[in-house]
Length: 116
Image (cartoon, rainbow, N blue to C red; front, top):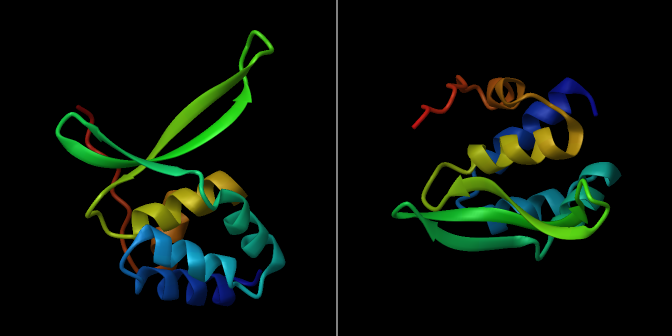
């Protein structure tokens, strides 16, 4: 995907208001790799309340260090956060594009999350 096409897609994704809307837009992408990656993620998100926050997790199974299949949960974003958080997570986990590069494509500045 050309940089200009990437920027156009990221900006369109940032205009959506929720993770499901952004995921649907990704599934409809003209880029076959992006559409396939988004389709593969469908149905793998879960909500959970942790530390007083409603969080969205990507829930998946993988083989652990002992060679056994195990369920894992990856924190994606908190409910109510800007959809750019999901967009950056998607491009990092699926295509190894750094968060700061995705934020830059959206015309935003990436700030590292505060440590608790």
